Image (cartoon, rainbow, N blue to C red; front, side, top):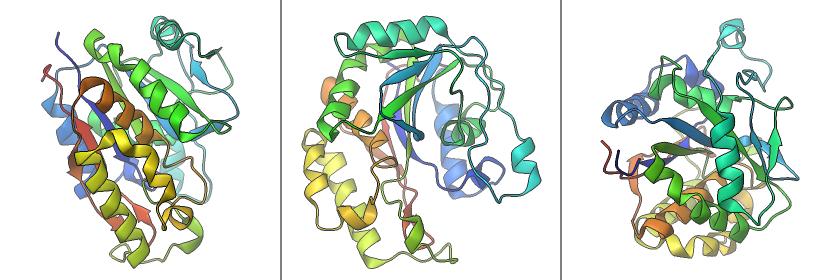
Amino acid sequence: MGRMPAAFIGHGSPMNALESNRYTEAWAAYGRAMTKPTAILAISAHWFVNATAVTSAEHPRVIHDFYGFPRPLFDFTYPAPGSPELAHRVAALVDPVWVGLDEDSWGIDHGTWSVLAHMFPAADVPVVQLSIDAAKPVEYHVDLGRRLAPLRDEGVLIVGSGNVVHNLRAMTGDPDVAYDWAQRFDDDVRDLMVARPDRFEDLTGHDDYPRCAPTADHFLPLAYVAGLAEAASDKPEVLVEGTTMGSVSMTAYGLAGDAA
């Protein structure tokens, strides 16, 4: 097996797990285009804690980490197996950076399963989640991405899941609206990612960054793809792009593999 692809997916609303739209169709096409991975390492915006940890359960629970959505979404499940072996491999790869092995406090959250439900609907690929350490600077996360690069040569698909622009307080109810500041930041991130992912840290100095990422949880999964791109001397490509409800970017990026 050759090098697996890697991706950052703008996951948006958890309702995307149940819906078919141009974003979910792009995720599904991306999954169909690649050789089935041996396992998936997901970095989701929704496991944002003051530590770096990795799920190590044989059967991770499916977390419905939201409220106010229709009952069918709470009934939705994605019963993918876990992989303690991959969890230990992640910890070994990033050493001496400490990574805790989490057997029961977390599982697969909607940042992961809402995307994978379209990419691998059979839920038959083992899934491990890596937390985002909220106490660490962006450089730390880019560096972890670089350290995790060998996994791609071992058949592991690495997926970061968040949103480049994620300001829920500024949201409108119109899915076709994009604020000028949100669109401008999304465009500038795209221009940097496809040309100079090694300059990813510069984005935190962008004038629109504080408004587009009032908290870093949804932005930082992209740092891992930037680190992977550096390690592979490769440039991400845009899989699908767009901004919805004024202040949520759905733009997704992929790193090509040679396993497809």
